[in-house]
Amino acid sequence: MVRFKNRYFTTEIIPLDGNRIGKSLDIKAYDIVRSVLAVTEQIHGEFGAASIKNGLDVKYCNESTQVAIIRCRHGPHRLLASSLPFLSNIGQRKVQIQSMYTGATLVKCFIFLKKFHQEKIEEALKGCRTEAEKKKVLEIMSKTKYEL
Image 1 (cartoon, rainbow, N blue to C red):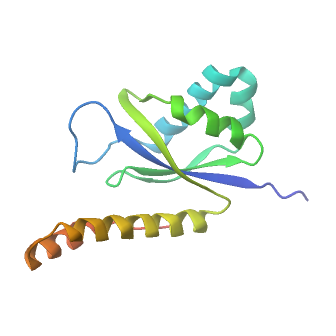
Image 2 (cartoon, one colour):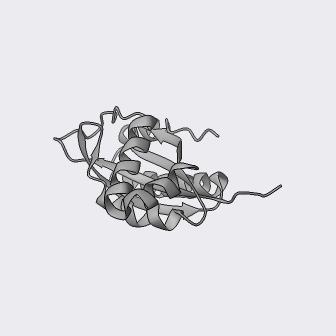
């Protein structure tokens, strides 16, 4: 039996259609997969879309932190990586995709996300002046869950 290797792209989805800071993204995993396939077909043709279609899946999509983890098979993951910067629409929404990390396992991606969010929390706490502000920041930012 042959083992299939995967690569996981940790991406940040930045909405471009208006000021939606602090609101959820309202994008479903199926919309991300469909948009990624469309942009890969646009950039690399039918060969590129067919190559990544077999193992393409969204394993994690957090609407509040605007982070998604996209799984792709090893090998065609290079085609997906070169197509992601050109992704401008997911569903009917204008977005920009920023690749944060590419890992071989979901666990490594979640470890990266945990460190990333910890740095964001420390950065936000530096700007707080009172204990009440610090409590509020910790309460808001600690709602992020990493589930497999």
